[in-house]
Length: 177
Image (cartoon, rainbow, N blue to C red; front, side, top):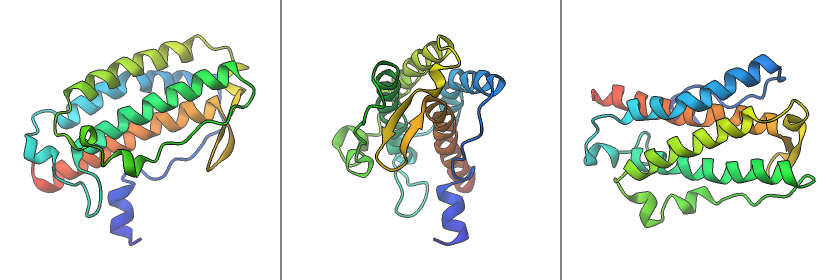
């Protein structure tokens, strides 16, 4: 992958886990609450043909990115629940490339995904705020990373919509929108 391809694909860099503190957790939860507004701002005023444009060659359309964000959040929210209620559960990982090709994910109609993203983010934040410090250490098994903690889930899902929102805003800038 060339430097330019890397920048288009990871405009804010790849996810990096940071040793958690209570302050970091509090900040992450705040980021959960503001992510929907940032995404809404990123897509505000885009026409259907713009939503069907690809943010990079071979990448998803902007609409597919939005649908992907919410689908990923839904799956990960369930992982949180499994990790809180089971002993290191093995959780299935979605085949995101195949999901993005399904008719609903190829649609330029993004409003329901934006509403769902806002709703799931409120649930995430409320759930995280209800946890005690020991809960953040509970784990679930990721197919690629092995056992990961709720702290990992929290941090990675702060990064995830920021990463994709940056793809959208960078594409808008490059296209002069």
